[in-house]
Length: 302
Ligand code: RIB
Image 1 (cartoon, rainbow, N blue to C red):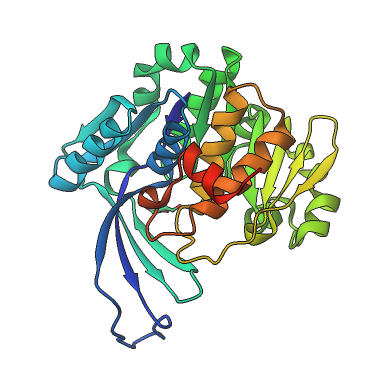
Image 2 (spheres, rainbow, N blue to C red):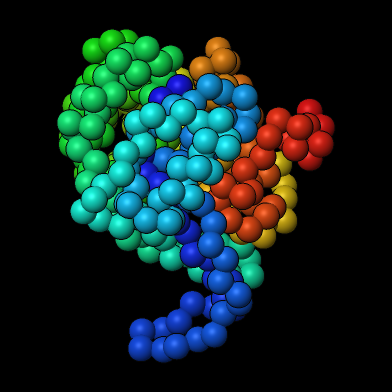
């Protein structure tokens, strides 16, 4: 599979609570971890056995070199991860509260310098892939060109609409599997999609926006898979005691993509992805918490 997306150096700090405007609070020891939704999804799929290549951009700095080396160590092909001379590597400042919830500020840096020309340079790899996987931490023109390139070559497009942005109708129309959380689904539909029953009821409306199928992630409540026929199936997630939810959505998307590429049905792949997402909340950080197949087998006896 071919992932088109961001790479960030994450700076994690645990806090008892988030500061009010104008307030300074003290947190735990800072931890530097590899992140970025694109790189996280690439590593999530690779750890589950998928063959993965990535298109992205880092800065000419230590963080960028370490992110690229990290991908190589995970078996991800980084031929199309290029270096920007104009901007530093993307960074994310992440606070995590005792309930495991995170709040993230992303400084896109080099990710914002990825363009349609970079996608064109990777055209051969994109059209040879079984699926491409995208998120929205890179410029929309790069996303749009990648979707167009893949769709024309009948390569499956898996689009994670995170962080939420207004995407052109053609992007949604070129998407085979749209992955959104409740907030993103609500923004797209202009109506509240909170909880499993609302997601089941409203999920099929997402297909009216263009994608062939969709998955709405519901955090601890699992996910709803909306098939091409408009059926909406709720798939629960295993109960876990979350330590840090950072990257759980990326674990879900990477696992979903790995399973779809391996030929699983959408609902089945969604169930597997929900287990991967839950497992990713059991340790701090994004990539550092992504599970392999053995971890999932040990954690959740099927
Ligand atoms: O989804 C989690 C990711 O969001 C973090 O790794 C951070 O880099 C931001 O991109």
